[in-house]
Image (cartoon, rainbow, N blue to C red; front, side, top):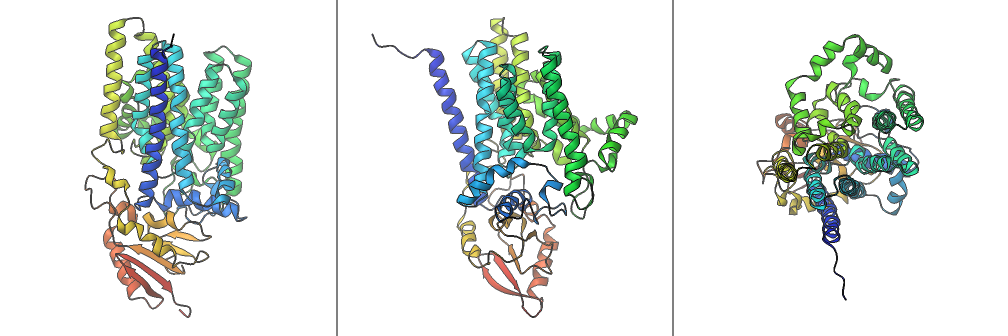
Length: 494
């Protein structure tokens, strides 16, 4: 007699199919966003240039960062980027970064689904948690705001926690190690995993080893390794410069002083982190999952990173529309699964009604606070390159690959595989070429969150004046002008 797949097997097939479609959609969208001239010199170009320069023997050297540091590791200690070097040897392109970022985030849904099945013993509710996770707006916002290693690490974080739960120490250590190699402060997540092993899993010896090793790595990185690579002798996130204010310089000039001031002035720090914008951020972080995450221990793992975001003086770290929060997603959902099991699983009515609440809130949050095509802020056409955008290939052929370039922010990632590239107007007086574009890639959709001045990273009036100054300059010649593109080349005798 022919056997038919069970209901659970059918839902499994659908679940993994949904994950595969999700990955393909976000690969398409991130590629399209880049081709539509909506990726940025800061940050995609910084990663692209650092990897490309490493391939050329200039290990992690960048000129495209806004932090005034030629060594990438002075600003972010992310050795995971070496993974991309042999891939760039096949052919260099920032699209590799977008591809692997989408793969990592998409595959992070697998341990969320598996854990939900194991803890809840209910395939339909587990599927709802999976769909809610894939609707989570902070993941969309991270995937569609350039490449960042903090987003790339989402998959490592999710699998590390899953294998912690499964008591598979070897795979836990592997994914935890990959996570801390992605960015230095992710070691704090591993530290908290060690603490949770001690207090919630009663694995005191192993948990202590994990916590001590992770904390040692973090302190060593921010107090020794990153200052070693810095021109100022301290990690770049502590230093003010001409482009960016320090995130944590208000607390002190070095790691020990920051810790000291936090301990001595807790009320002042509390006043900062309880501002309206920061509290609103916390609400939006957990609202899509009906705030269930707040009531179970896996959420504790995220607290040190959340604290870092809240004490930052750069508001993008506590803005739901940017990329920083993506790394918190797995822990929000793991904690919500635990709470759901504890509160609702045994009662059929509560189980159903709160499953509907979770799905409804997740969908609503995705619409209101995401940047995917589900959101009214964006539409699918935003990810389809225009005829104007496609002309960038023609411009690329004119600029020699060895030439230095000062370039408009949203054009930068198409030219960053070179030794020297800067965001215009930086180095506008000594770059060999200057490339600008008067075409507004956001004009067709006035609801866009990121408008033309954001793409320019300067006021439109100042930008227009800079164009006129270049046209009248005795130092530069306008050698290409077509469809809004303006390419200037330095005169040899200027």
